[in-house]
Length: 298
Length: 262
Image (cartoon, rainbow over all chains, first blue to last red; front, side):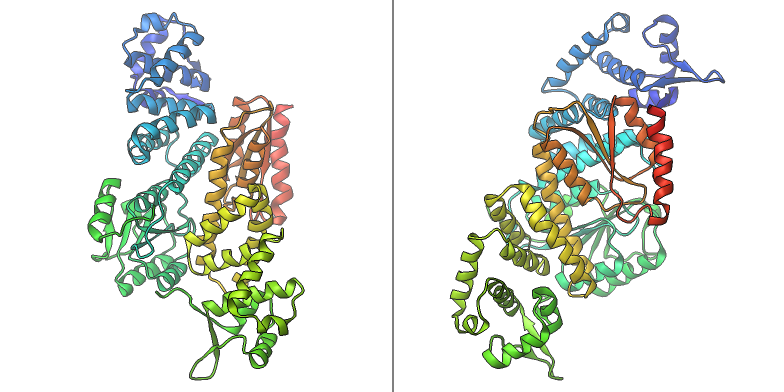
């Protein structure tokens, strides 16, 4: 995998202009050139650049960094990241590094430490989301994801599901919320976070996951009689499936909470039963105000 | 609540494996069940009847005669089946509970059943001897419209969660072997439960296993060869690529991924 100077800039926060100066002044980071003489960085160079950007943030000077061996850089970075007050920005960079090298152990250690320190909700909203959007910047937002991103998002999904398991069971008469993704929608992390939040607030969560055709949602509503539905609209879908969903919501007067891309909403004239969620915090407030929830079973 | 609480005689047949014809005979001869009749005189059964029938089926499998079973007070019926369960490797009661938890969208019952199984045997056993046969049966129940796809979504997501939780634990284990495995599904393939389980097994055996999951383009697998020295790829093809394209896919795989390394 190779990275352009613009990609390196966005990922490390170091200006392209600065990178070019360093190239002339120091020899620790000389990018390769394409046949048409355009600079690009290798995986190893990008990793080094991310490390350098973390050191710069921690008041090291580029003149001294340029003289450090890779080993001593790794030791210092390790120290920085193990401090309790590590800034989110640095944690995100460390996650990106672990992702690029597919280092499950490092990735897990960083993630689990943060969950322990600040809770899952904070970890996902303040670190995982920015992490994913930076990664998206890195590789563009097309549907085809590189192996590293597959690796990272599967790991994050696993962590959210494991964390959900530790939450207490809801009361038998708690309100019900159904989570699903329509056909073609495959990004589960946001949906899982929603399920985690709802369970944490004492709701009965019915998680149907990916690829649920809308006629099946209709069936779910009939079988379960849920209080709320929650989904994400991220990808374009076929319109027939959308129609069924829109009709269902109006007929049953059941609120559909959603987040995602405004361009891919299913209904032409959204009514009051369509409730956009703009942030995890907004989702939390909505659930809290919606209904009194009985205490969980310890 | 409007969860599916009544079942047709066909549903009962599919869920218990006992023929509708036989159920009708038992009803007349032993008054084993009291179905509710619709205005047009069609039988329907409640949850309790289903549960009872599942227990009866289990006793029959264990050599009890129907005449004797019919005489048992209901409490004894459940007591005997539970004892049979404890003393047997056949997780039939667990299967029944899983079915009920699925039909009722009852997560608590699912969790309880799962934890009981886990007390008696390893996760591997629970997965291979209970979950896999259960999932196979679900496929059947779905075909006969006894359950809906929603039931299937609900229950497979629960099973998936259990696999992932075990995986999370297995990742704490030390890595004993140098070899790296990379697990992927080809593009547009999303059936991942089997692959997830393999990932778990590799971790438990001390291998370095990397889970890439759904819909991975072949091109992107090369990235792994840049990072790791020796990678063994494991793909899992349920519906993609279609059988007629599979030879082409494998051919392309060996040209693009396997050969360049050698």
